[in-house]
Length: 76
Image (cartoon, rainbow, N blue to C red; front, side):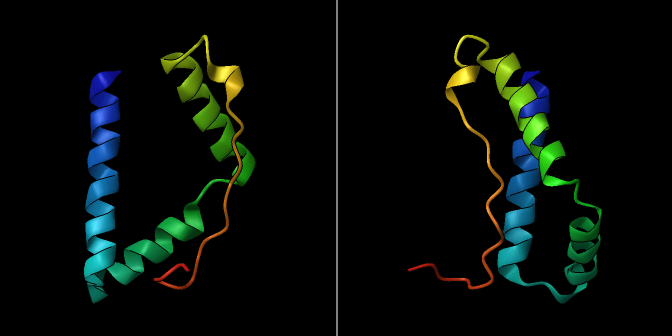
């Protein structure tokens, strides 16, 4: 399970770095990722499942909610 978590974090870091660099070739990949994104209910269920495996005694203490994408790069 630890290796899966490490792979996930690595993927997130790589995607964030690429997005910040604004590489034009990545635009198509990001469009595909956005188009193939699971429904919010599926994402929430997946996050709830991971948390219940990692922190079974505290999993009921968390509430999951999908936050809409922010279009601006700067949030005030």
